[in-house]
Length: 354
Ligand code: KG4
Ligand code: ZN
Image (cartoon, rainbow, N blue to C red):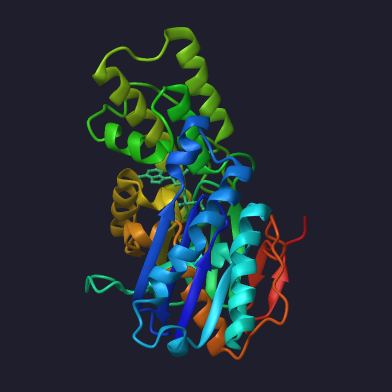
């Protein structure tokens, strides 16, 4: 089975072809980073217009990698939320039109399911080991930061989430404060490698391992206060030190809470996902903690962590193989169905009382 995936929820226009065993046949991503960089963040109206320009060439590039083109595609999967509604509409409209014109089934995919199932993508490096169910998924991106229990691809429950900013948003805002440009994650990651993480004592936000929620806005304020008092570092080493200290505070709390969730839920596998999972400090910290606790860590390739359509195609494959298809696919901005709670041994779900 081959599924075409389409992704346009934020600032990446993407199309991909994936087999039901996770093999990635084509994976095309057109980034809008340059268009949003002058504003220091994603501008929804610019994103929607850029998707309109990029989508057809991106789709053509992906589908042309099959000799039989669309004839070889079994179903079309598209991200329909959560995300920027104007941006989502572009991908959803194209997917609907293509499904109508070709008579192929259409499947709406939750973007977060895509990130959480990305460890199943096989890109031919030979190093990818898919996680065993159940696993804990730490999803940290520009728009979301949360811990999930993934019982099966169709049984995913929320364990904890950020109460304010997403981790990627904190990277981007701190980079903006320091005049490092957009997006902030990759540049802070690069500078932090040569910095001293103990140079500044930024507080690890909400550090209690018992509490599965996150908060990053206080940390961002601590960096802002430091910059107001001392100014932006004027030396290269000073900049590297502040990046390393900030990054350490973020990644330690992410990794500690994800590992604590594994222990609490009695689950021995942790998988990382989302753009922040590309961070070398987070990968190293999660590896060290998992080794210490005897847990298996699954870290997708960087291409599978940041936004892509292969993860959407794979999540679509899973739904299609399960006999599902959607007659109507409507974009939505916020995740409507993720509930905090627990799965019982028999698979039934018990929502947590608030
Ligand atoms: O998953 P993603 O591509 O898009 C969203 O769904 O949001 O994540 C983008 C976020 C941005 O905030 C970016 O700064 C962050 O991921 N990011 C990183 C790194 N690479 C991307 N953050 C920390 N370290 C990185 N190496
Ligand atoms: Zn994402």
